[in-house]
Image 1 (cartoon, one colour):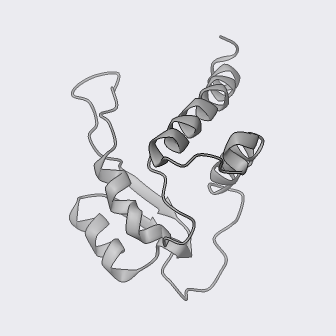
Image 2 (cartoon, rainbow, N blue to C red):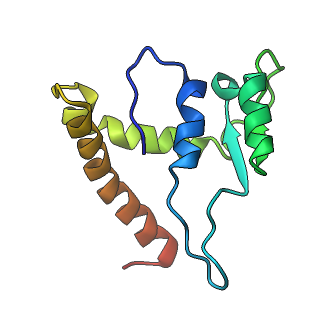
Length: 127
């Protein structure tokens, strides 16, 4: 996870976030070091970012800037919107009281724990 100030464009931090992803264990074989594909809205659709993602060997599902709508809202992007709404329930994150970026990042990670736990409980049928 990587937190940026509110006035930073989405595409500027995207490559740092993808590069900082930890390895993900697979049922068999080596851990996955990069995602198979990257999904994002028009805020990420800059040509330079799309080319960089493709050069990393990742399938780009980033919507190009200025493209017509019709992505089928709710199929995939709803997961992101639901997660951001979950973060919005945490007052400490909703109103940033922290002077240090590391503290704000830590509170974001702490807020992610119950969201992930709830989602895993739903998927696995109760933990």
